[in-house]
Each structure stands twice: as structure tokens, then as C-alpha cells.
Length: 569
Image 1 (cartoon, rainbow, N blue to C red):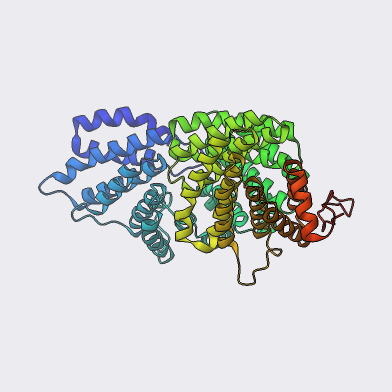
Image 2 (tube, one colour):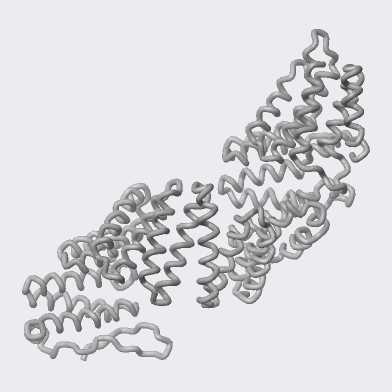
């Protein structure tokens, strides 16, 4: 390609003098440069290749527009349009690529070879996939695969335009974009097997495709929970992302390397190899820092590293990584809120959790408020926003900002109700939790009857036919919260007998449950009731139960800190 490229100025001058012969020679040279056949040389940029292909189309089009144009001119114009469409896809100019592919098939009287037809179909499919229209891409992707399966080996000049392996990769991309991961993995495996069976000479035309297929296959296996299979594929994929392809196409392969290392880290974590997971995550961050033009890759690696630090309870390091990640996502979300606002919201919520754990409750509230603001900018934020508002309400209760806590909890419940209507079985535990958050906030304001109503509604969502509150953790928490709210409402109204009935119900539930938080709430509630109305509540308890009022209702029965049935004394 180098000598041909150097001849382009001379050929352009020749085409101006003798448009017929000179134009044909120039067009042929331009197509040779736009679709180079010798891939072991460093390829020019896609922008330059696209410009050459576009110039070739401009050279051939006047020849076709003549009244008696030759068949070869129509054929070569179609070829130029196919080459241009393929390079436009690689340049991510998707709308133009689809237009060029359609124009190639619409040239009057043109005869596209099977290889060019398959390339045009594949180009259209890839443009649809990358344009977010994966459902529409499935039909041309399947058609392209079938065309290559039934094709005789193409001529040498057409081999660089596309192969069966490339068509299979396009089909796998369409399945993956639609969330049909199992089908995508099956196609990826067929494509990988095809690449493994190729000779060295054939593989030279797939130096970009082979690492991409192996890395995406590893990610698909991880998504399916097939962690051992993904790890078994790891050495082969690692050889590709650190091998010859990385030296010839560093801008393409290095992001794949980061993705591969993060996938390996998650797979190691899932199989219990935490040291290997931490090593892979650290390596991914180090590699991603070199991709200064792709900050989203660094964000992906930092998020992975934060997960590994959480597993190891390295809280200071986790806080540092999450702070850097939040700053990075803030910059990304400023330009592309649709892609990054939701991710920023999740990271800020994780950061707030770190601050809560360290005791900095005001900072936790501030970060959660930022998370809520970011989530509101994301597309279709209802489920995430409801979760963040509930978290914000809980953290505001910790800082005694109960009025704001009630407002945010109400909005969280309101956002969750339509989700329950669409899928009751999936979302009824969620709305029960949101109702419990609202109930606790209302109780903090002294509106105990409203809190009781929330707990009762939460119980109605959770109650199963067996009606056994001790068998389900969510239900046990709800019923215990209801008993506490009833006791406080009765005490506030000066009805100690009703408060005793609610306390007895709470104590009975605590004895059936193994949840430590229920036990702790039981202790606190009994102590608070006695502190608020010591004479009335003690007298009412002794009259109803015939025993002294409990002074200790929770005991630890083993050294591991697990909850056990309490005993009243």
C-alpha cells in the first residue's frame, strides 16, 4: 500500500488530463489504499481511509452517470460504495455507513459479487447494532452469516472486506446487545473455534478480531455465571491482548486488555480467589491510566478495584478509590448524562455508605443528595431513584432531619408503587422496605398512627398464606416495626394496657426470630417505654403478665455474634 499511496498525487494529475484511463487508475489505487490487503503493515487512520474511499466514489460516479456507461464502471462504483460503507462503520459514522451500503445495492445494473453483497449486508447489520437498533440488526446479521456459509472462497481482493468469522462476530454483538447472552456466547464460541482453526496467513487478516472475540466471550461467560469457563479461557485471551495485535493496534487492543482484566477480577472474586482478583483489578487500573483518551475505561477499572477493596474491608483505600471514581464520573456525566448519570449516582451512594461506616453522617447525607440529583438526570431513573431516596431518608433520620426524611421516603414509595403494579411478585419486597423507611421517619416526627398504617400496608404486601412472621426476614422486620409503632402510639395516647399488648407481641416475635437487629430494637423499645412511662407501663405489664417488667430481653448465646432467641428476666 505504501508505494501506491505515494503515487496518488501523480495519478490525480493523470486523471485530470485523461479522465477515462487516468480516472480508472486513480479509483483503483484509492480503493487499494482504503481496503489494504497487507494487514501486517500499520494501517492508516480510519479517517484517511474513509477519505480515500469517498474520493474513489467521486471518481467512479461520473463514469456511471454517462449515457452509455460500461458495465465495469457500474460494478466498480458499487464496490467503492461497499468499501466506503465498511470504513464508515469502523469510523463509527453509522448513519452514513447505512446510506452508503444501501447506495451500493441501488446502483442501476451493477453486479455485486457474493463477497461484496455479504459485506454490504454485514455493514448494515453492524451499523444497526452500534446505532442501538439491535433488534433490527438480527435479520441482516443472520443473512450475512448464511451468505458466507454458502460462499465459495472469494477472490483475493475481496478477502479483506469480510469473512464468516466477522459475520459471526456481528451476529454475536446483536445477541449481546439484546441481552440474549446465552445465544451470544454460543456464537462467540463458534467464531473462536473458527479462528483457532485458521492458518497463520489467514489469521493475519483477523489480528483485530481475534482478541475482541476472546475478550467478549470471556465477558459473556462471566455474565452467565460460568466463572470457571471464563478463567479457563483467560490465558488464551491474555496472549492475544498482550501479543502481536497489541503492538500493531495498541489503540484498539489496550481497551480490550482493561476489559479482560476486570472480567478476570470479577471471576476470581466469584470463585473465592481474592488475592488473584485484587491483582487483576490493580493491573486493570494501571493499564487504564495509560488510556488518557478513554476515561470511561479508567472508570470501569476503578469500579472493579473498589469492589475488591470492599471484599477485603480495606476501607481507607476504598474511600480513596470511590472519591476518584466519583470525580471521574462527574466529568463524564457532564457531557453524556444519559450514559453516565446513573453510574455516578451509584458511586455516590457507595461513597455515602463509606462515610456512614466511618461515622461522618453529614457527609453521607451530602453525597446521597448528589446521588439523587444525578439519578434524576439519568434516563428512566425510577427504580434507582426510589432506592436512593429511601437511602437518603434513612441517612437524614440519622442526622435528625426528620421532615426531609419523611418527604424523601414518601417520594420513594410513590415511585415504587407503579413498579409493583407492573410486577407485583418482584417488587412487593421493595415497596415493603420503602414503607418501613417511611414508617420510621413518621415515627420520628411523633406521627405514630401514620407509622402504624405504613407498617400494616407493608405487612399486607409481604404476608404469605402460611402467615408465619418468623420465617421471612422482611416480614419479621415489618411485624416488629408494627409492634413498636403500636406501643409508641398507645403510650403517646396514655393507654399503657395497649402498649403492653404490643410489647408482648414484639417479645414473642423476638423469641421466634434469629435476626440480631430485631433483638436490638426489642431491647431499645422496652427501655424507652419504661423511661417514658415507668410507673404506668410497669404496673400494666405486671397486671397483664403476672411477672416483673423485663429489664433485659436479649442475650448472645455464642461467640460468633449471631442472633439467638432472647430470654426475658
